[in-house]
Image (cartoon, rainbow, N blue to C red; front, side):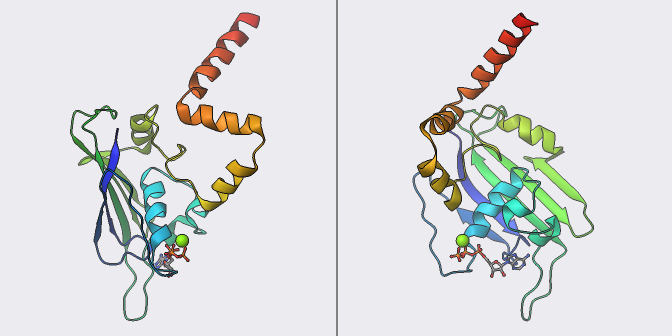
Amino acid sequence: MVYLKAIEAHGFKSFADKVNIKFDSGVTAVVGPNGSGKSNITDAIRWVLGEQSARSIRGVKMEDVIFNGSSGRKSMNYAYVRLVLDNQSRKLSVGEDTVNITRKLYRNGDSEYYINDDKCRLKEINELFLDSGLGKNAYNIISQGEVDEVLKARPEQRRNLIEETAGVMKYKLRKKESEKRLED
Ligand code: ATP
Ligand code: MG
């Protein structure tokens, strides 16, 4: 299984100092006072995986992810986040044990993505995660609201969710497509 080994961030939201948050393969709990930046960690993950909606990461415009200063500290000119993924299982089609995914955004709107140290387009990151169970639309990050949704869902909606998570959805879609082609 691919797992997250570390998140490096610099200039992303409250992370004005460069941070390197390391994770083990088991369960990690992040604790801290309100406003200390716990949710900013999951925002950082969503952002690197290509989140294009500022609202989904609790901003108004994308520039809001850049550290905007605090008392005695100047705002920064860019936000940088790198995910370090363990790929010993080779679930990601890169021939390396470790895969780094990096996103950088400058205040002037310039944006860069990298897979390992190679500059790439967002499309390539999306393709890398396709069918891997990872990626910004996969169920890597379950927010508080989504837990409620699962609990309140009707049985058939819940079934859809399980099928999507299990990776059955793409086969169902393909089946539907070929049935449609037969009808046409
Ligand atoms: P809670 O326990 O209330 O959920 P939390 O630990 O999840 O809190 P976050 O929401 O991750 O906290 O962090 C919010 C903090 O991040 C706020 O103090 C906010 O000012 C700061 N923050 C968000 N965006 C920026 C930015 N662009 N520049 C500087 N600080 C920012
Ligand atoms: Mg929070």
